Length: 300
Image 1 (tube, rainbow, N blue to C red):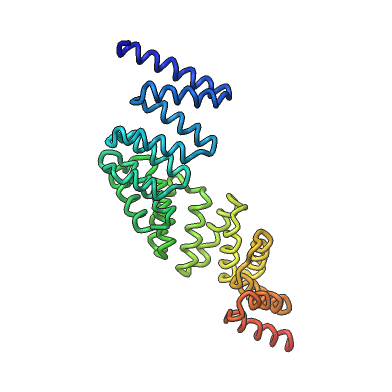
Image 2 (tube, rainbow, N blue to C red):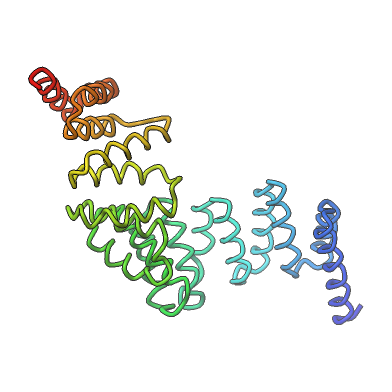
């Protein structure tokens, strides 16, 4: 059969396989894709679709091996390499994804720098993550992904405890993420750690409003209100955090004790300090707090 006939046959069978998928006849689709790969081993589309079906069946290793087989046929094929890299990332195989994607020059495919930045972020390799995101921004300054890259760099700066830089990059991410709970959490965390406690109130409340299910925001809000002297709100947020979590730290109970003590509830404060000490008998804040609360209770 001539080249044109081969192309027609391939496209016809691909159409059939896709129709099997659309109608839910997935095993038929798998069989047909396998046949197509045997007949047309150079056609990547059948590999891609079959790998996606393997993923649907929770057979990610089979899909990965299939895509690696395709890549081995032409290791210079950037489309296949990027597809495999994304496939691995989608399934949280971060190191494998990095090993596949790192061979693509950033100048050829700038988006690869974004993928690597994200993958290294997931591996908590923050310096490499930041480098890749910055490389991406320097080349693709007008891409929609730039705003997301700024957001991730702001997160990285928080992880690296560089809160001034975190604020600077958060500001750059505002174009698309002004109402994002994550961006507002970055602002709140950064202001809090810079001692700008009143500045932290508005963003933490915005973050909670957008995502009330994020438990860590309640603890953060409690800490902020404790510093600003609103002890009732501090207590409310700490109690809400305890309600939402099975495991609570000694530090949180100690902070709750402090909120109660400063809110003139020494009896409640003693109870929470005792919980803190039960979890960590060496908690110095709780040890000091329980003495102060006991004294206040006796002399109140």
